[in-house]
Image 1 (cartoon, helix red, strand yellow):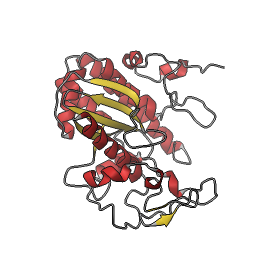
Image 2: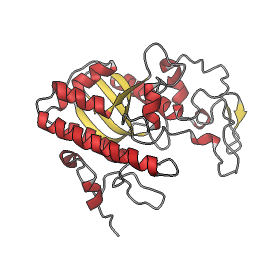
Image 3: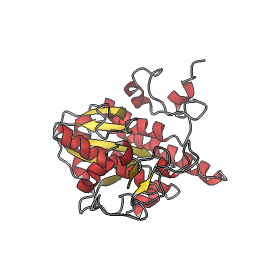
Length: 293
């Protein structure tokens, strides 16, 4: 049975709809039962499409992305393109399943790797969880260890599988790949931010562009990513003087668009939409007995 996309459309800002293209084959986020989740009030994919889908289709796209690029510390310069749910098909990091980011913006001088959060924290590394052998593939530290699943000895179970995160980590973070680190510096949700930071570095190197990893988040005290951003904890520890991940709230992005854009009606309407969506998600989170997904 085909998915009913009507509630998804209703949960997306109207000006973003044209950014989807073919709604039937778009890579919607799904639950374990394979049901699309973008109709939910707290859907991180939906709010990402609201903002970056609208930006993709706006005649203000180049001027707004130039301003965002300057805000996060990379060079402006259009024309800019925006891809929603972008996948690294070049497999620059050697991942069997390449990282998919919520939005990817490319200009003539720079690229932005954009991970979007709403009510949820960042993702964690799967190697410390149980595997098919019933044992974790990593003990939680970056130290020499044997992966019980494949018998490979390595400081990082992912590196032992040929995944190149630690090829780029020394270029982004002040960490020695030949030294032990206990616990792993990328335990918890620092893992997802590290992965986006090294992907940005790999893209910049491959395409000869300045590149930045951006954490786009809904700014509200009830949301974990927003709380970390306010405390300066989004950026993984051990980073160099230049931030590895630049947090920018949706509200900031829209304010930038208001400052430099010409279509003030569009950005004012989007601002109201996002404000209401954040308020609804916050109320739902407070009412829930457990954290939202």
